[in-house]
Length: 328
Ligand SMILES: [Cu+2]
Image 1 (tube, rainbow, N blue to C red):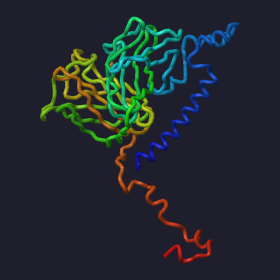
Image 2 (cartoon, rainbow, N blue to C red):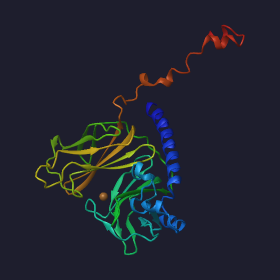
Image 3 (tube, protein in one colour):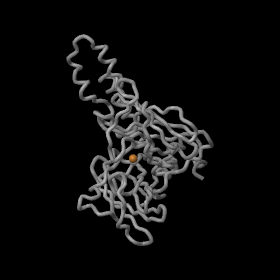
């Protein structure tokens, strides 16, 4: 109940944000077709010249993953054989991008989660010569999924674009699991220390044990002892959180604790997904956290709506000429 109330308010807040964002975009010019802008200003619009370099857009004020197209780059799913997921990134010139920088050991990180925040997967597609990325489909079941492409085009800035992908079948929406500071996965117990606070950096520490013993021989995965992704409930805003320290730097232990510097953009519920590697396999531990709210646990006593409709005022009833009847 408490959470639902908060989300309603949150959704309203987002509507306001988007309204503002579109307004800004209109004033600043189209987000994607930089070429069009140049056609329009084919004369001598020296005041527009700063647009080409900075590529400042509304997205500079948004978390990642909310836009399907940003800074001239667009995420486009393409038809693929059954069991495969394929997509392209088109660039400012409209052609598929074929050159990417390596980040965290890979040129492309594809993250998918169902819109109800279940079914998280983090995979690494292969690039065809024509700019098509292909991977065994990580969309495990029916529903609407959000697919996030996290990449850096060569010569450009890091980007995370997101797109909805529908998988046909009977929908079985699952409620977001309650906030917790401990979870188990594949025989490991993972505990979470710290609470993210909106607008500032918080340290989140995840500690891994197995059979009651701390795990001290974590294996590097994508250049780190852990990777943490946070998705915001309500719009699936995407945060890729970076670990503190790297394997082999002489000061970062291989467990049992992995720390992350996290900054979330708002209050609200988030689902955290920790990928870590041990025993030759990658494991994913999941947590629900509520940012910026230390009294988040929903309780009956904390639900103000329960009392609101309970007590009709005597004065209102008196005006209807039936005194006493309404109060029996
Ligand atoms: Cu990745």
